Structure formats: structure tokens, C-alpha cells
Length: 509
Image 1 (tube, rainbow, N blue to C red):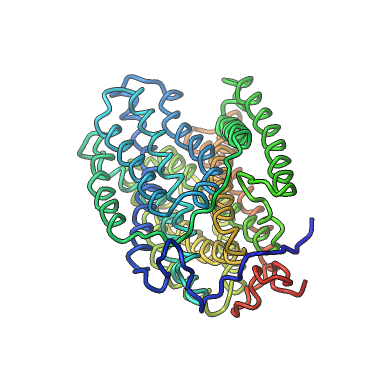
Image 2: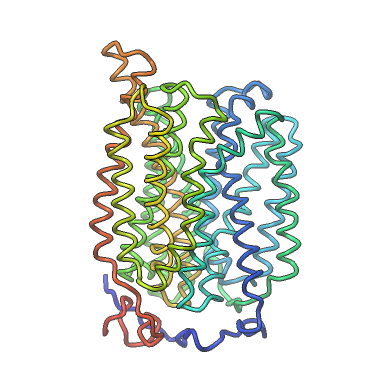
């Protein structure tokens, strides 16, 4: 596969404002637009993680089993995996305001349904509707930054936006635990309603059409293949723990295999449509850009590690350390706050020095956090130890996410921004699903192995925690080595990959 991309479009220089729908980007109020999208995306990602702590209350109130209640998360994740691949087409085909309004209406309707759901069926439907809106907003936020923010300030703004991805999952359990201490589970959604409604109103006021829609034909077969492929893959991976313990084997494996086969056909069809000058659902030429490829891999390892850790640490603290739900959430809070404080600082440093001085030390800190937890966390560990190691891990995460996302998407030409954002968000969901399922499966296997030797439940859970943390430690070390090869993007527009005759990585063609 060649690393050279030929372009017939004009290079998007930072000194020349793009004109979209008659509105030059220099005349747009950029700060309110970005702020609205960041706040909206933050609430939506928070919504993705906030419900897991409420599962016991939901099981009791709705009279459903543990397997059934898990579908509130699995169904949400499946919907994201199915819808996000189509957002590249939607962002290219529809106006900015149309995408924003549609996404917000989906999320508002879903949240209102969830807030007043009388039973599991309505709540499940509400989660699916919410996920459709979430799937559209996340890529829109990224493409807005790429379209509206000058190249030399992009890292700083991307740092603020990375709070959405990095901090919201850490704050979810704390917020959920606080609300559930005093109120019913439906208040998790009632609290979101006025916030998302205000964000909707702000968007109607500030968000303009900063991109010009392109006439494109939707390839229906690609949509079907993407739905089957990503849906089957995520379902199979999400049910890995049930496969390993033997409670449900056939369906997850079958759907996983079908999903992988559908994805192979999907990739082949996108490549063929591109060669024939058709309209692929996802333009996979983004993968021909070395900086995009390498940054994407390291981002996926970071997301895999973070989401896996967010799932297994609460289980360890509940069983091995005997902490209450609210306390567990508060223990995770300092890590989230560390990321929130550092994200804009890291973004500013990225604008000045590029990814290298940040990403490699960041991955090293994440690896150190894993290995310290692997060595020192047992049933006698203190809360202070857990907080310290998690904060160390979170600082590394903050140093990684902003530079990598800015490098990945900034290395692409403007006409691939929407597709690159869709690819990045899609694969982040897959990494989250794999990290969550694999860490839980490894924790279960490790716990069972320790219990078989006669260890008490608290000691067995602590021993089981070593398994996922060892895997995370190895992967983050390997990702740190790959990060050493990620090149700094050239500052001058002439070196951008969308200039005809230049390599995608900034070198000569």
C-alpha cells in the first residue's frame, strides 16, 4: 500500500478561510461552537458510562436478571459500532446544522424516554436512541476542530475536547454513586435533560454551516455490511466472558465470525468503490498516511487500557477492599480530575513541541501504573495506593490522547477529515469493547485460578487483578516503542499532506 495520496482539491491552508454555505470560517464565532460541541459530547460520553453503577438498583426495580441488565450497556455499544461508520458519509453529505440538530433530537428523545421509562423494554429502546445521537456528535466535534481551529492552536483546543473522551468515563461512577445514594435510578437521566436542552439551544444559536455538503450516493450494501460486521464483532467480543465460562458459547462465537467475515467484505468493497471513483461509506485512504496509522494504533491501546481499567478496578475495590459504591467512585475521581486539569496544558505543549516529548513519556507512565498495580495491589492495599497508581496512569493517559488525536487527524487532507474522524471513533468503540471484555475475562480467569488453590474471595479477586494488568503493562510498553516513530507534523501549510506532490507524512513524494 503506497503512502502517497494524490489530491485534486485545493490545499486547506490556515491562512485562507474556508467558505461553507456562504459563511467564511473567519466570520464564525468559533469558541461558542467548539464549547457547545464539547459540552454536548461530554454529557453523551458520561451517559455511556454512568449506568453501570446503577445495575443492581435496575435489576431490583425492573425485576430483571444480570444478563438482561447488561444489555443496557451492550445495546448502547452495539448501536455506536453500527452508526459511527456511517458518520463519514453523513458529515460529507449533510450540512453541519442538520447533523447537529438530528443528533440532539435523538439524544433528547432517548434521554426523556429513559427518565420516565416504565419498564426494561422502553429503557432499552431509549438507550438505543441515545446511542444514535452520541454516534453522530463525537465525529462532528472532531471535524469542527479541524475545520475551524488554526493549525498552530489545534493541540490546545483538542486538549480541551479530549476531556470528553478521557475524563467522562472516570467521572461516571462518581456521579452515578452520588445520585443513587439519595435518588432513584431514573434521576441519572432527569439530571441530564436540562443540560442537554441548554446545549441544544446554544447550538441552534451559534452553530452555522461551516462545511459545504457534497452530493454523494449512499452505498446501501456498505451500510448493511458495516452493521453486520461491526455489530457482530462487538457482540462477540462483549460476550467473551460468557464464552470463557461456558454459559453462552455458540451465539457469541457465531456472530463474531460472521462479523469478521462481513468486515473483510466491507473493506474490500470500500477499496473497490474508491478505485472505481464511486462513493465508499468510509474512505479507507486515511490508512495510507503513516502518521494516522501509527497514532491510531497507540490511541487504541490507550483506550483499550483505560476502559478495561475503569471496569476491573471497581470490582477489585468492592470485593477485595470491601469499599462502598460511592467510595469506589470517589477513589476514581482524582484520576479523572488530573486528566481534566492536564488536558489543556498538554494540548498547549503539543502545539509547541509536537507529539514525541509527550506521547512516549505518557505511555511509559501508563505502563508504570499498570506494573505498580500488578506488583503492589492485593487485599491489604490501601485506598491511597489505589488513588496514587490510578492518578499516575491518568497523567500518562492525558499526555497521550490529545497529541495522538491531533496528530492522527491533522495528518490527513481536509477531504478525509470526516472519514478519518469516523474511523477513529469507530475503532475507539471497538477498542473499548475489547478492553472491557478482555479485562473482565482475564480477571475472572485469574480469580478462578486463585480460588481453586483455596484462596478466600478477597484474596482471589486481588490475585485475579494481576492478569489484566500484566496484559495492559505489556501492551502499553509496546505502544510506547511505536510512539517513538511518530513524526511531528510540519507547521507550514506547504508541508501538509493535502498539497499535491507531497507525501502524506510530510516528506517529498
